Length: 242
Image 1 (cartoon, rainbow, N blue to C red):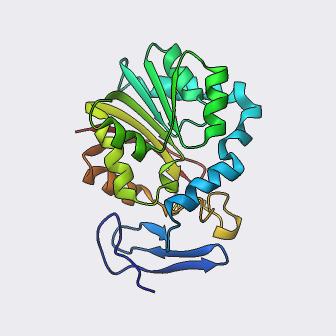
Image 2: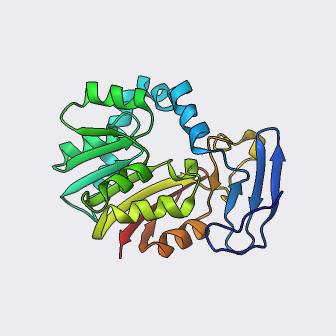
Image 3: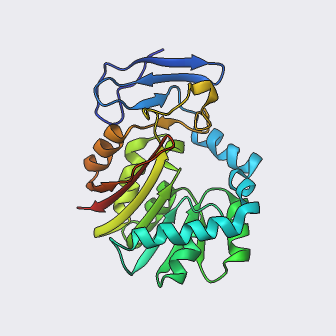
């Protein structure tokens, strides 16, 4: 089986990293990016949402999630105090509602129809779209531009890191702010993969370190402005569209 070049830096020196019944991971020694190969088709990934309603399992903690969303929104507002807001992978719409309460025109996109149905029912003042970020960006074709974008625990699901990052950049105005989180496979407190709750092939296809994520974002015109300390094995960055 031929292993493709690294999506982040293009190196062909990728090497086996981990393999089990769930799939095989490969690592790029040049930029530390780790990826699943082969990556499942878009149809298979869409089936995960249709079969499981992935987001719906979080909704019993709705009040707590909305309170946390308000706190994250206040951090994002340090870089983007007003304007249009997009949550790329909005789950039940908690960040979208927090953004609306903060004065933004707020939009959420999410491929899980069950999550969008719940969001529309509970936060009807907002606009919600059933789509992946890539589908939304392709449809918008520059007509939908935002001042603030939130993307939490989503990029690891993407089959193509470059297409996903390009989609993020394409919906951001120059100077717009991005708040992005994703698991950190290189974190000093990450447990063995078999015990790590973020190790979920084929649902999770891409695994970043701060180094590889920063390089990917920079490649697509997104400059990391700050990175928060994470006690748990995760990455939290704020970036700007150059």
